[in-house]
Image (cartoon, rainbow, N blue to C red; front, top):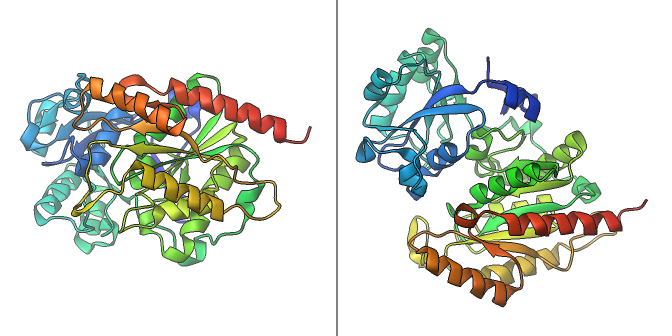
Length: 396
């Protein structure tokens, strides 16, 4: 069974993504390569797939610095039976079942593949494993990689590789026709838990009988089975807003959801990136959940640049949202911006997290939780209220 195909826009998308088909389809076995980075910020792709992977069965992680440990124990202090190996050879010798996919689980602040990693990927191809990778130096355009993949009958899936310019979407203003709540999960930095929070909420909503659709904006979300969205940071700037809009509108038109959850990227206050602005413009979210790590002092990968902080990010968010309130179409951005705040508990004790929850709920007047420690019931209740509020506004 194939997991991915090229869609009409030239992007890799999951085959048979509907919930029914996913439940019936047996996930294909995959090994994640995350040498020296598993459980760290640069290992966020591997971290995400170990926590949630509906289309792959993760049968091992490769990281020699954590060899022999349990991947769940490393990530969240809870064993999940996924073993960490020191090398590809060690993993394949130990795993007693066929492995069809090799996933490159590192997301560094560089587009280039280290020479040592290149050799390991070639070894995986020669073991007849399909390659799934999210870097921006596309391996499918590398002559040696392409020839080896053809020789051994496997595919290279560059998850960040976008469609040709002719097939990308410019902003059309169709987003203002969307008549269900759209919630964007943004943050105060990169690699802070936006996708994790979005997916936990998305799945919790479905468990509560709410028809939720998830729109991915990064390569890991696509690897985790998102039907809608693109990896924004590889899209030419003129098309960023239009591609976000297209993902949200397509989810609305095709799925008839009760609510749409949009994965955030970077941060409005981050000096290096602009994706958050494109998400606010393209998705026109009715509410925003903001993810924040109280103990993180500097922007990820920019250790000389202090994070502006939660209050600064909220003020900036409210300013941008206010600027987007124009027009008379059905889709109007509401006066209230925040739906809630999600805490990333890095370098914090559970007691500290509880204190910050109480403090932020008092300061900002919205539900606050740590999704990994305490779940997202507060957010589910807030979304239910938002859906009810939205239904009263719609014409009967």
